[in-house]
Image: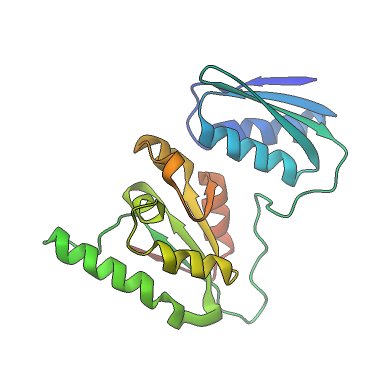
Length: 198
């Protein structure tokens, strides 16, 4: 069994180390130890996307993800499908819970209005990504939580930065979207036809 100790490593290092080990050594089983829930979710999701059945052990603050090769890959792969040729696929990157500068109360109102109006993009809206302070829009107290859940239920893939959730101690309060890492975000940016950053 290949063993990786990724404790103390920032996103997306645990996933990148796991990916490198799979590419270089092609192990039939792998054990990855991380020290936060966001990294655990990202490593587990990545292994499943590569055809590994996973199990989880927790000891104190450490998580041990064990993967055994031999299943069909799960559909939540690290590399999202590229947009179809001829279509316009837009990724919206929300780096804050406010829009613009000058007045925070006005900025919050503008961001909420923007997110509620995103549906006007129709099928061109391909990914909605939340990082840094933007992850606060995906938690239980968010004023746009119902709208975001509606987008997700309608098929929009929403990605929420796990490192950011951990930083703000909000991982347990996230209510919508898939906890993700910078590898997923960079890959989505690369595949999108256009990225709108707020």
